[in-house]
Length: 225
Length: 241
Ligand SMILES: Nc1ncnc2c1ncn2[C@@H]1O[C@H](COP(=O)(O)OP(=O)(O)O)[C@@H](O)[C@H]1O
Ligand SMILES: [Mg+2]
Image (cartoon, rainbow over all chains, first blue to last red; front, side):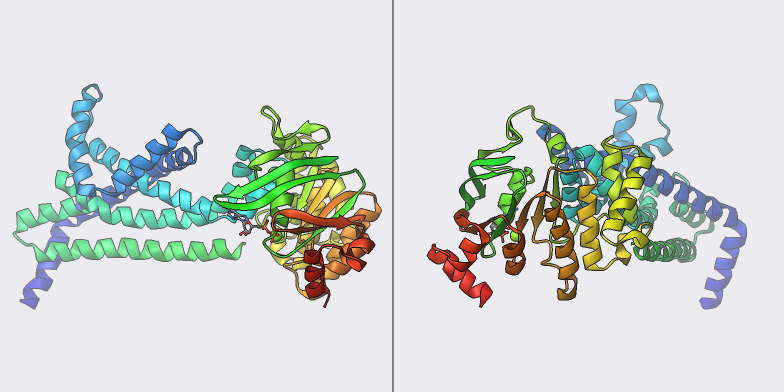
């Protein structure tokens, strides 16, 4: 059994290493796109949440609550089937649909990260800036944000780690990520455990080394304060 | 210079300011004393609308700050404020702490602001710290920085909210000394403080607050040596021992 296991792994790796490698690439690409645009839209939602215009803040709060309160897999299905119908003229590829769904999901989480990062800045900082005569925007840009960034960046790194794992759900639509590589190998070699173990180890190596990097970076940020 | 008219402030159902009408003249040095929770900070923070009064008005140099269309940011530039917990900006150097507002609000060019910052830092004995980040400063040094940061805007009045309460005892003196030189230079000051000796020494007028009201006021000698109100007597009895 164990002899077989070992040799099966070797066989799967020698035959399909290219597929696994491509899977790593696509998983990382998906994650990067997700967090990159998630950061942009999440920050916008965080600002909207703080808006004095009630309709704007209510919309942002509703968005965050609904996205965070429903399963990602459901959102993936929904947008995967809905987007092409909603935007037929755009001719969205399935990869694009999955990306959009992931961005929509991640934006809600980033929104909370940004909000928490801003809230963690001592309110005395903003007060001091306001008493000097800075307006709200100047206070945000020059005093609060530069300090909030130090809370936000490590949390964004952790979001990236989370997203790496979550993109596995996108394999439902065979977008070529790591989990898709597993499914392909399973289908052609009639093996389940071996490719799963391979893919599992790759995921772990990715997330573990990233987490280590982030905590190192975080310690550096802390030390500079 | 500053006039409050019938100032009320509620936090939810809690009434914190209970009708305060006071006139602060240019050149006055006013100490506000009173038990903790009596509304001293809230009163001070209402003067520059850090707290918005529930009713009443704050008139600064003839302008009712509560009126619509008043640019509060412009008026705040003329009211320096110093907080109990310093609130210096940790992401900026000592010098940048001082020059940020004057440059951003176009009061001075960067070069003028830098020169003025050097002068101010020299005045409070922090010249050698100009390029440091505030994390390297002691509490007393941070508070001296906070004071010159406010002074860099050339304020007409300085508001102090317990400027020495968060300091280790050995650093209280250096901060009080800086405030004293301001007073001697003719700066209008409103100082919330628990330093009774200091209040007695530098004030032109002392207000005793309790339960959201100015219960008694007078010259330091009158108020400290011969208080009339039983609450004042009780309070002073406790703090002066
Ligand atoms: N932002 C706030 N929200 C709710 N209650 C507050 C707030 N600020 C102050 N208070 C309450 O108002 C009262 C007066 O506070 P404060 O003006 O800070 O008193 P003092 O400075 O004299 O100690 C206290 O009971 C305090 O708990
Ligand atoms: Mg107070």
